[in-house]
Length: 116
Image (cartoon, rainbow, N blue to C red; front, side, top):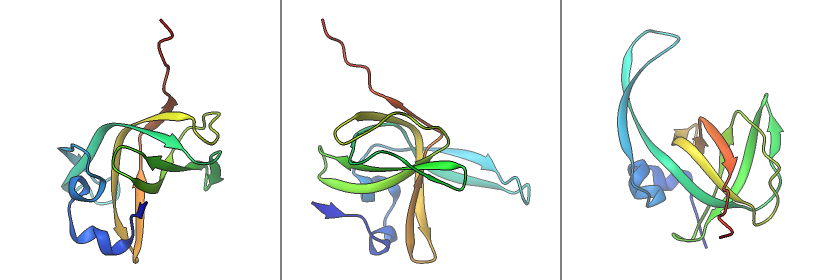
């Protein structure tokens, strides 16, 4: 399984995660400057472990079995995930900061499966 590292981020988010992305314009809360953000609107993956609380947010270690990738995504909310729990992240962005890869989502939920 390939692990995403800081060496991967000479590429776009789409190239790194192998997911379809979109772009939008955001405004910085600190400076008021506009900037373009690339994001994954909806990302379905599997949890590896339960989420870990970190600075008031939650880190989810995940695997993308479709693309054979493993990485961590931070989200503001906590769901009851454990190994193998199917998760859906909304509006995932990511990048490189101080030689560390980061991913953040606006929200996460457990994928509801139809049993019909």
